[in-house]
Image (cartoon, rainbow, N blue to C red; front, side, top):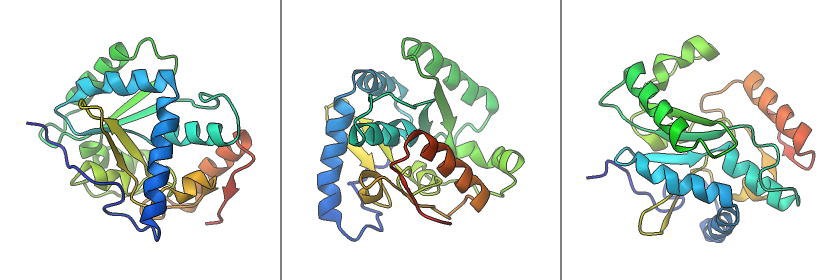
Length: 210
């Protein structure tokens, strides 16, 4: 059986307008399905089951930004984030095996794939970023702490053709080109570094101060 938590869109959302977000969810799906390389990615990712997983953050957000600003859909995308959750094996070797699997699986996609087991992030995050982190108890709990409200986003294409979207802070900021800090984990320095990097590529973005 699949070890995956099923969530309706915004079941854990702070959005004040879930009806609008439902419409934006459909628009998000339409944008994703309009990208041939993204659809190849989503179909290939289905082989990651039975681990719960999402394709998330930058490659989705930036595809939407590109659509809204009339740029090529793959403009500015430097990597692809695929996150999964396996608390039964927190070893580096197990995660490395998944990384190698993804490298082979997505060899034809010209953008690097970054694969991480969110159940073991707490083991390396303090050394890399200088911020203590408690173990995530679910995959969704990890997405809840990503750096901005717009990038707290994960999607997967189920084998029956249905879509699963997780957007705990809604989709308004994403479609309004708004970069707003999510202070659950990151600090001001990390936020501003990311925001400035994105603004260099997408000057239409509205950067919300820390």
